[in-house]
Amino acid sequence: MREIEFDVIVKAVRDIIVHCGTDLPQDTYDALKEAMENEKSPVSKEVIRQILENANIAKNEKRPLCQDTGLAVFFVKVGDEVKIKGGLLKDAINKGTEQGYRDAYLRASTCEPFSRANLKDTVGYNLPAIIHFDIVEGDKIDIEYAAKGGGSENVSRAKVFPPAAGKDGIVEYVKEVISDAGGNPCPPITVGVGIGGTFEKAVISSKHALFRDIGTRNPDQELDELEQRILTEINKLGIGAMGMGGTKTALAVHIEANPCHIASLPVSVNVQCHSSRHTHITI
Amino acid sequence: MAQYTLTTPLTSEDTKKLKAGDTVLLNGTLYTARDAAHKRLVELIEKGEELPFDIKGSVIYFVGPTPPKPGDPIGSAGPTTSYRMDSYSPTMLKHGSKGMIGKGKRSQEVKDACVKYDGIYFGATGGAGALLGKKITSSEVIAYPELGPEAVRKITVKDFPVTVINDTYGNDLYEQGRAMYEVKD
Image (tube, rainbow over all chains, first blue to last red; front, side, top):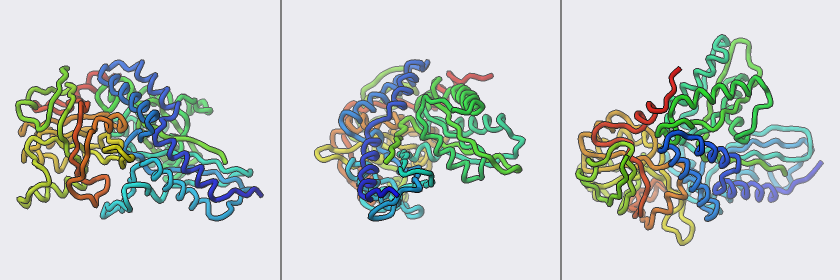
């Protein structure tokens, strides 16, 4: 059994939150740069230029990339030979989240669902973090983190299709979701698609699909082909950067698929804005 | 597509020369408000009570900034999605507000109100909060501090970059831009 100190996890989580708040990941930056070079609309090109300039300012001056610093979302794989010394893993992640949001002057965006009252002061409180746990073999903890903004979350959708809908039905559905969303989710977007499983499994898969680095290919050839097909269709919509019209509406489509019930074909579409703040650490 | 530099408060003369797709550098005072603040502002208007700022010619920025770092007037401050203000904006325009800054499409009622009351809906680049925050030279909470990031702030901007989305003639850049680049099979 390997023992990991509670505070080691708090510090690690705090550090990735601070880092992601101001430093756009290289995969996202590179994809945006390529999109700017290939964008045919001068208006959208200028928008992407501003997005890249914003990323440079944020990184150099340690300012939050966006005022929507998101809700903190984690996918955590815990090795079965790991013991946390001094507290619960969940508590450590929440404590690190609070410290990170406070230390980096990130916005507290959690509120009570009905009164809409902000749950605490405007600094340093973004709890509870959204945490998805999995238990795996080994003596390490693997943490994937993303700051998930509200604008792109608001246009995300899920639906359980009859099996006959097939790939064509999935392509049409994703197109419909992105078309309806227009400029609201801050394109150029990344589109996470969860297929199969149960209703909630599809939704969680669509979220996890967004954690994959932009520019990496799906190792499953069939899914890779479907990703490219959907990406091409989305970019024909003409939405462009911030919806102002253009050829680069999406940077990438990422799919995760699961076995599902013989009666169902669940499909979930989770949208990620251009400020794809995500990272991955192993403790 | 023309480029303009304008100073608030805006007049009908200012807004009528703008066309969807024009870029504008805004200077002067803006007021920040999101849905929670709009709800309260519109309630005040309906009750005939005084607003916390002069609505005539005002430009409302839909933003909930991050907290400022020590020594800065404000944190990162990019636009939030505007449709959440759609039910309130026509009332604001009717009572003299001349502009809104946000991101994303508006309802037909808002577009109609822009035509009727000489209002402009400007788009700023969403997710460019660090860049846009730096264009804000002062910030003061003037109402509803309990709303936290959603409080109403009076902010001063210098060359704040925006694009005209909906003009006073009923044009919509989102529709026009998309039609131009849509590929139909």
